[in-house]
Length: 360
Ligand code: NAI
Image (cartoon, rainbow, N blue to C red; front, side, top):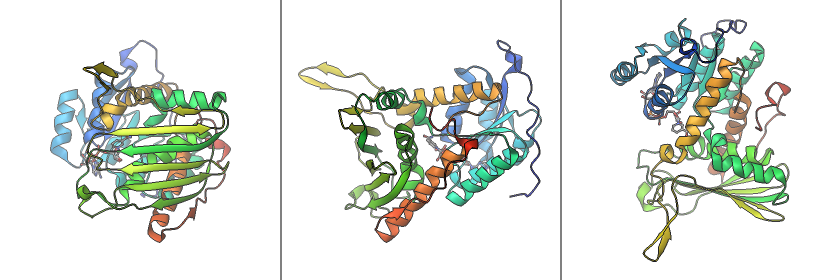
């Protein structure tokens, strides 16, 4: 990190309802697949935000995006973050770049929405937590978009209502059609399981005690370069047992499952992507082809709520501690995979500073 002292949070421009002149001026670092989708959403369908600057080390692509959406191209991500005409920042670049960009946003006292993971390991996330606490104001939101998915929100309402009784077991699956041989073993945890790690603790309002990774025999499509599928087992502090199937080459589509087994009933995640059709003596529905198709509504709600909260000078949604907690769990899972045994999740108690938004 670049080692400048942290300033006090910067004065917020006053925003007035109904005035486009007062749109939140957003800078986006990383104009790859998800960065472009976020820019398109903000520019074409969301309210209250305007992308004014974009940056990417792949300059040609970013210049094209800038031209398409009337934004300015800035070659250096740190320069974009420091720019006076940028009120808030979206970090959607590669995972290893997240931590330093988020730290730069904190140095500037600017709100930042960072795609998951917050950092590639728990030490990096902890640096962000410590810097934000030293600043004394929450500015970071992490892109755990499942908390904005209608199905997961309904599932949480059912669990919280007590309708299915005390939760005992969670069965989850995270399946992707294909990933190819360039994929890496660690990504199964740090990029894929990280979503389940966050969403299940949010659904259960619980913390994790110990974890284990099981490695079934590999599917042919992976060419043996990484383990696929994998099974993640998690035991919570309250004694709930969770299993998560991670399968990156399941061939048939992008398929997300989550089922809570309670002492009085079972609640399962609905998949709002496609209707069920009965025809010609068959019943069924399409399966999404990827994360964008499955969670398109969730991404829109997530970004709209981020824009709204930043315009009201308030951090909401998954915070840096949530990013850190997920990363501590991911680190334990990586250890477990390597030693093929249970590993404990050693997470300190959540500070009051981060308490209110972890459970919406
Ligand atoms: P991508 O590879 O399509 O795009 C990443 C972009 O970052 C590339 O354009 C690359 O040139 C740029 N980049 C790399 N180093 C950079 C640097 N130092 N400064 C500025 N730009 C840099 O990847 P994708 O799929 O768009 O993913 C981006 C991030 O979003 C990843 O961290 C990923 O984990 C996360 N993601 C989150 C999802 C979610 O469901 N919340 C879904 C997909 C991605």
